[in-house]
Amino acid sequence: MKLSFPHPMIIMLAFVGLATILTYIIPAGSFDRILDEGTDREIVVEGSFKYVEKSPVSIGKAFLNVPEGIIEGAEVVVLILIIGGAFYVVDKTGAFQAGLESLIFRFDKAKAGLLAIVGVLFGTAGALNGLQEEIIAMVPVLMILTKRIGYTKIAGVAISLGAALIGGSFGPSNPFSVIIAQKVAEVPVFSGGMYRMVFLNLALSFWIIYIIRTGKDQNNLEPIKSDKPAKLSNSHSIILLLVALTFTVMIYGLTNWEWDYNEMSAIFFAMGLAAGIIGKLGINGTARAYSEGFAELVFAGIIVGLARSIYLVLQEGQIIDTVIYGLFNPLENLPLALSAFGMMLAQAILHIPVPSTSGQAVLTMPLLTPIADLIGISRQVVVLAYQYGAGIMDMVTPSNGGLMAILAAAGISYKEWIQYAWKPILVLFIIASTSVILGIYLL
Image 1: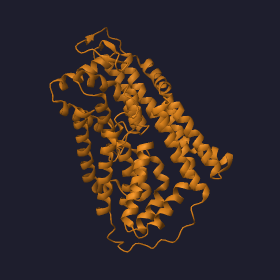
Image 2: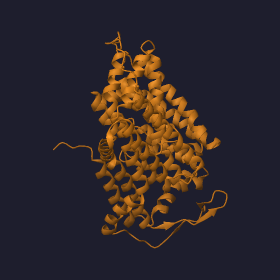
Image 3: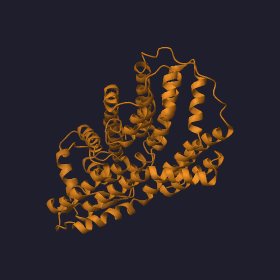
Image 4: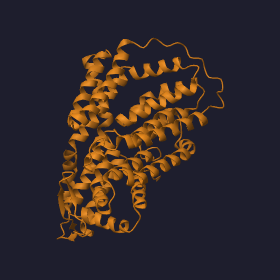
């Protein structure tokens, strides 16, 4: 029988089972914590670790932790479903496709400029919304674009998915990664935003230039002339402006009105409804598109809940602080730069069996932020190490369903993708490592 890579849900359930077993093996322990009046958050008291009475988790309790974890992560799960549904509605209206086709014609004599603009657009969308699975529906248009301007199919995937993943992993506002991680790590939302923008611009610029220089199709050196598309309709223009306005209001609300997950969910839900009506899907058509979008993102939401379940099992068994203590000892005598780099590398490796960036944030931030407090690294650096490690790894791990689905839709094998992308991805890791190490001294 041919072995296959385990399904992500099986992997997460295996982690729940492993966490349960560890509560019988790892001694229970705890740190003392005090309230830091300056930041109004609890911090670990250095040297206060002590072992406590063992409290292993039973099999029955472990199963109970599964729904409890999903319930505890309900606000995040709902946000994932609603944002996914809203963008599915926008895609169904044809606004995204119409906007892209209009760009192809306008830049018929500036192919590299068009590719750069597309990369910036997808990078911005990744930074704002963690765009990934939504690109699947755009693959046919992207393949037309690259063929018409003389670039390969791999270049089309790289300039869209690759740029979006760079935006999501380097940017300051991805609600599925950096915002969740900052909230769990008790770091102010959008703090360190300008610092992140510097390295986002550096990484995205390198990526786009690399694609422009290496992505040309040697078998298609004479690009196909573009026929003039239909004028971008008023409804499509309004929908695209509505999407931009929604993100603007979301960012302002998070920074000035103390918005949380529910407020973000509400504004995107309203955007989806408005886009459906403006896009002439009708009330029922909008509802059907929403339900299809929900269906696409249900599993991503469940993965977040399962990750929370793993944490609940570790918490019930009182072994979280013991794990933190065990991780702290090897890092205690290492240079801070090496410790921070090790955190990023560990996040990258962990992202192979845990393909959900949101789930990984919920799983790892509670474990790593106390270590940062103990060894004197800013929690912001820990968030950087997480978002870079997990985000860049999304570009290579076969457990990332969005990557594999987009490659399949474009007719590109995983091997072909890796052969093209491994060198620039390695450069991205170097840029990320530089950011993490400099962050020790600047953040």
